[in-house]
Length: 381
Image (cartoon, rainbow, N blue to C red):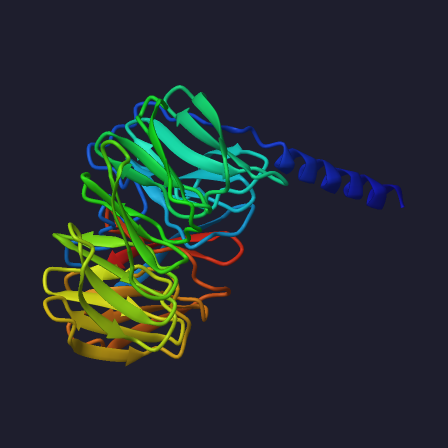
């Protein structure tokens, strides 16, 4: 009986120790001239990896975190990969072996992908039981916060990094821009609920809202450029390619919209609610809906090129490469699809819903699925 009691006490002590893990990320001598610094890689949201890959994947490592994922993505600096979770944590893992390099713990939830600027990690925490959030600037070279700002509202759409700062939008449409030293540059009130992540070409900031409007704001001074009613509510994030905005709505329509005027170039009906961002290359646009249908649309005129039935639920943004589309499916799968014909080439089954938008760095693919599991795969020939 004494032995069982001792084992039980040891078990409780281990749980206590795991809950008291040190809240710090400190990385020395890490340098990266080309980090993966935000959701969608660029401020235009470019879910495209320009280098050829093999279709053969070998699991490299798997690591777990405390809470679940939102439909966000990892960010990476040098050989470190960062990911947020819904229990108020930021984790840092080694890209090489998945070893935990550190973590930050806060009270609240972190819904959106962190932003990297040099050695500064920027993220926003939605505080528990109050309608406020905390914007944190954390220097992982120093291993400490350099700024912490209390702001009104909850922030569930992805933050945006532009050339001269970061932009964030609250659920109630309050838009703020800060420079990289955490100084407020401007704020603007749109007085509309927003669940569509923004994009910017560094001159114009654009996003959809729940009223079915496209809102365009001058990125430099925060003034309204235009605000136009398009159709049904937008819960799909915004993507910019050249002078075009691509965005899908709750009624299943994908729109091409002129960036400077807000006028509709064309629309395409998918017949299912669109949550994922569009993936755009030189000639085509790929979009999926909650019915599990995936489409390639010609960029110039909105004509359908191919359609693929996945028999799943598509709400996370895929990653496009020159030959393949890597597609998360909330039906516990990851699909590999040919980019030119939309043919289903392979599917990997997971133990939960695949949540994160895929990211590739250093020939390694990062996939996150339900209950906070992060997997790294290596491409092999």
